[in-house]
Amino acid sequence: MPRIEPLTPPYAADVYRALRRWMPPGVPHEPLALFRVLHRNPELASRMFALGAGLLGHGLLPASDREIVIARVTARSGCAYEWGVHAATLAPQAGLGPALLRATVQPDAAASAAWSPRHTALLRAVDELDDTTRLTQSAWDALRLYYEEAQLLELLVLIGWYRTISLLANGLLLEEEPWGARLPEATP
Image 1 (cartoon, rainbow, N blue to C red):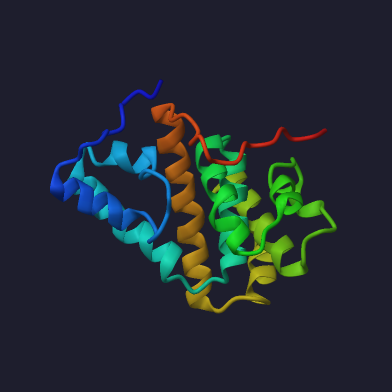
Image 2 (tube, helix red, strand yellow):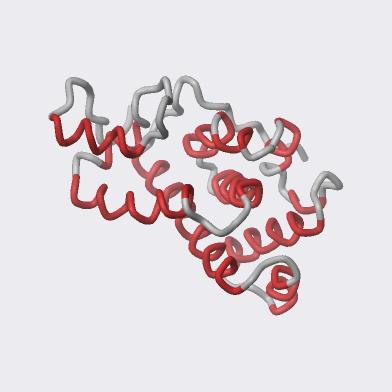
């Protein structure tokens, strides 16, 4: 049971409008539990929406790269909730199939032969930042082969944002969405 219960319908008109904004058009699901919990503090939810929506809908990174980063950050954070939401929706739309998504949960995800050199550089950067909160010059140089400065700034924010989202979902003890993908176990 989550530590803070998500709002349930019927929603006040302003909350309903705000929650619909958070969901892509035509999605057949109720607004995410995370969004419904955040709307217990509408001002905070509004501030968070701007960054989250900007990263997902208006970012400079290719969608596949964005979703690889999100899957790796959330997997390393043990955030089954957010990993499952993206694995069921945005990751497949970005071209990530089940095998690549499973690879993001492995202890050394970057070692998989399934990744391109660009994606290997991304995964190594995520792991370094998660382990040390810093990037070595070699990790930065590997990223610079594939990304412009504006994209690199966005990448760092994206990693930090999904670390924050993972901490939020884990701290709230959010249960996985019933339609979400299940976070696979890492194999030794």
